[in-house]
Length: 329
Image (cartoon, helix red, strand yellow):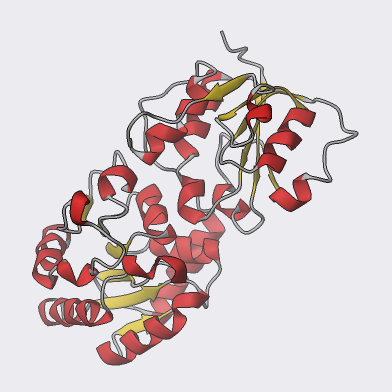
């Protein structure tokens, strides 16, 4: 039986989407230890994702490189540490600061013998949220609430409303996430398809505005698409920070995007959304759970025929347009 006052550390160094995928696990841990302490160590660039969440008592940053120099003299001030991923330096750090460490089976077999629980990977592919819940389950912490979580502040929301009034004063307000990240560019839906979708939206909703979201790596693509769509589209890709972008997304009437970090943020915010998934990364395994206003569009290729070269153009504009019409007022 898990002590309700247990002190728990969660270590997870990952990209945006993978970081948000552990939020149901954090919810489960805090519910199991309501009088305890729940701290998280994340990649420095992802720490902001979990700010303001009510279940997290303290947030810090760590990387596999910095982990090697930490925790040698601080003593073991956590009852448990849960380590996601397979970075041996993170596991070794956890062993220095926690009495009991839970992690998935590590590549270094000698580390597995030092873990309190070495959790085997699932025998078959399951949803990413369910996979991440396996570590809390090893402690007896379970949940049936699989929703992702993100918590904007009141100040951030006020700033987002002011930005929309100044730069995109129209309804409906629609967000396009046009690109994943360079190493996973095969997940991108063609810019021409987004352009055609935008033209249909403007034809049916003359007062609509489209905001083109993304990071610095998608700035050029978003800017070109905004130029194609005209004055009712504005590109903010690469211009806003992570939390400012998330706050802006709360103002959207609809989000349409490919499989990448902001799509997970949209899912955590619970806004109406249409998400497009490549056959190498199925929505059945990655799309937000418990989201009543989500439409998942899967690449039509069968798993046996799927390769990274399978073009996302196989998802027709008509298919996306049908889902969009169902979710716009």
